[in-house]
Length: 401
Image (cartoon, rainbow, N blue to C red; front, side, top):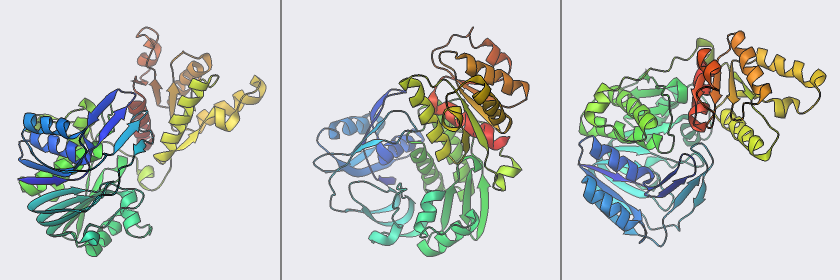
C-alpha cells in the first residue's frame, strides 16, 4: 500500500482544452493504480470536488481520505507553459499521516506531517520549497525528488555543481536518495555517496501539466513498492514521464516496459555551459501575432536559452535597415522557431534561408494544410501543431546542436 498525500485541485487549460480534477496527489494516485499499485489518497477537498474524486476512486480502485475545506485551489492556464492564474485556498490545519510508505507533495492549503518507514518527498514549490522535516515529518528512509531550482532554494540560493548540490541536500535533509531533475540534461540520482545520470527523453508531443507529478509517482512506486534500485526507479520514472507527455495518459506496466523513446542527446558545449540562441521568426503585425511571439520568447528564455527576436531586437523599418540585421541574427543562431500560421512571406524566407545554411528549424502551425507545409516537411523541418510541443522541440534542437 502506498499512501499519497498532497494537493487535489481543479486544472483548466484553454489550449489544448483540459478541465479535470487532479492536482499532484490526485494525478499520482491514478498513475500508481494504473501500474497495479494499491493507493490511499489523502488531501483536502471542498464539497464541489469531493464527489468527483470519490467517483474516480471507486472507478479506478484507490482509497480516499479527504479533509473538508471551504474552497479547493484551482489552476487556470492559457497553455501548458503559461503562468497559471491560481485560485488560492484558505490555510488549513496540518494533516497527520502515519503509514509505512508515503509519497508526499507540497501543498497550497496546508502541510502534511509524515511518520513513515519509507517516504518520497516532492516539495512542488519553486517560490519557497519546504524542507521535509521542517514541519516535524520523519522517515527512516527518505528520497527527495525535486528540480534544480528548488534544490538551490533549499540550500539558501548557493549555486554549486549538481552532484555537490545533491550531496549537500542528502546530508542536510537526512535523505538516503536525492533525485535532481535538470531538464534536457536528464536527472541526477545521488545514492550511497555516488551519483548517476538518467536521460530525459524526447517526444513528438508534449503535455506539460502534471509531468513532474508523473515522475514522482513512478519513482515512488518503483523504489518503495517494487523495491527497485534508485537509479532504475528514476529511469523508469523518466520514461513514464515521456509516455505521459506523448499520450496525455498513464502507462500500464506492459506499456511502460515496451515504451522506448529516444534519449535526449545534449552537446558537449551545452554541458559545459554554452547557452544556445534561438531565432524567433514570425509575423508581428497584429495583437494576436504579437501575443504568440511574446509568449514564445518568454517560454524559451525561461528555459535558459538566448532568443533573437526581430520584433524585440530590430523592430519595424525599411528593408535597408532591418533585413541585414535579421539575416545576421539567423547566422548567429543555433535553431529557428518559426510561427507559421498565415504563411507570412518574411517568415517563409527566413525558414528557407536557415535550412539552406543547415540550421535546424521548428515550424509551428496549427491551421495550415499539408500541401502548404510540403516544402517545410521536405527540407526536414520539425513540424509541430501544438505550442508547447513546438517550444520543447526548439529547446531539444538547440541543446543538441
